[in-house]
Image (cartoon, rainbow, N blue to C red; front, side):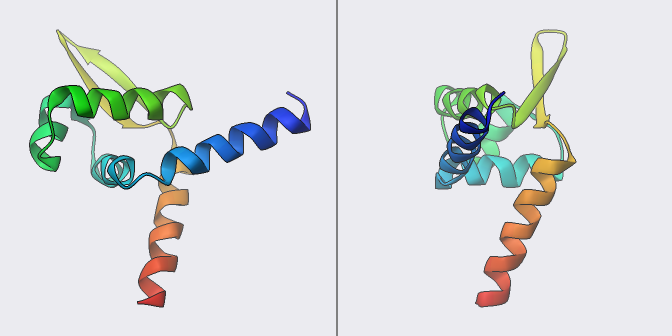
Length: 96
């Protein structure tokens, strides 16, 4: 991957994280893995809306999933994403 591709992917990552709905999804997944139904209930959104947000996050390798029977359980892909989210949250909370 050349430097332009790295910059472009980083910009897309921050752009995706800049959406308040996706931030809510990340916040929920930072605590523990959840299936679409659990996310839908927790965030009071439709299953299709949650699936749409998860697809955007998955496309940038921010979330992953594991299958258990017919259900897919989503979680943050790694500690880098968890730490990025925590640092952003800490920054915001310190400024309030």
